[in-house]
Image 1 (tube, rainbow, N blue to C red):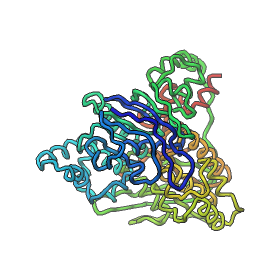
Image 2: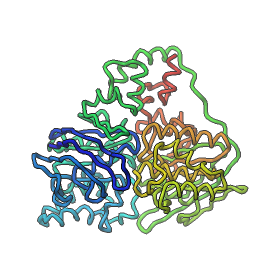
Image 3: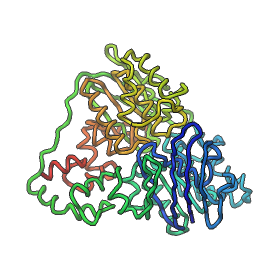
Length: 522
């Protein structure tokens, strides 16, 4: 179905090859997982399938592309619209209409579908993606996760033979992610659709993949069976990392298979429960919210929320898409609407917010300029921001334009800029989108160090692995209200939706991370 022959590509602004002599075949009806470190070239590779690279990105590309038996090397992206459906990392960037229903119909209108068929497909797609209740909603008023589901639905509506997805579950809550992956599985198995997706949340996807494509930082690729690639991959989901450390063979790619390997260890723990780390101590209240109310024309996003945030505490704000997490963060920061209640910060405490659309905060012409400006604004020594950036996403060229970076690299740059000022209260909205496991580990270490220094941190996220790694407290929202608030070890392991991969393997022992499992097994 897809064949790339000796494909190489470099951007016009760089002499370095982003892709180097890539040759691979993907069969019809196959789900291929593209993986690699942040900034390695995954998005560039995906853009080659429908010639967005180089038609829209610029740059120089060599080699040939074949789709469904046809050479498409020189075709325009619009000529491939019925063959390849593409959903990028930023779903909102692809929207061209105002409402959900209009967006689902738009591509079919452009392709000349009959009106009756368009109506039927729109209804089927809304049911398939679970967005029928969003029919008349304005796209710009949706949460990031809701926007992502709409973007995927808009592509699915025209039934392309090949579906290319860049980070399709990064902004989705666990249940929504499972729904989307189940939909993709049905497309592959029932309709023979070929699906190629890049995903840093590999723990969600790996058991569904038929094959994997590993993109290395030098632009080379290796295409093989998922289990073979995972054995040698430099980045691996917690399940695979644990299996490698415990020498489980054959390498498990599912929770069920991993639990079979861990059965004896669970029996040992049943007789002699392990001693697990306790909750982190925290200090005085750094931010107090009382009766916070946020309303939009069609929905109440936050309903009378009371919340105390303490010094030295990393709090995870969790809940399904549209539960009110982002609206609450903006209200706590002071830049968003606050229709009722009050937010106060005792003492002289600065509050900083990193939004979901982090790239909106980038406005200079190079990474070096952004870092230098952040150093000056924060009053810190030269190079501070750059050092933070290298911890989160090493190897970004100083002369690179911020808008040319991958979504993960953009987020890393914004995080470094905000963290350079060491704000006393730091609010992060989905800070792990586009970050690989290594970058997330560095982010978790950084947040723990800030908490140790007395900073107050709130992370709105669906990434349970990050929460288990660095958050001591979990606040769960639903329908704009706080429905659960407690220590991470009490909230996560016993939850069917919020438990980490390791917690599911170790259940009923509340072990949450690979490190905890390894230490307890000793």
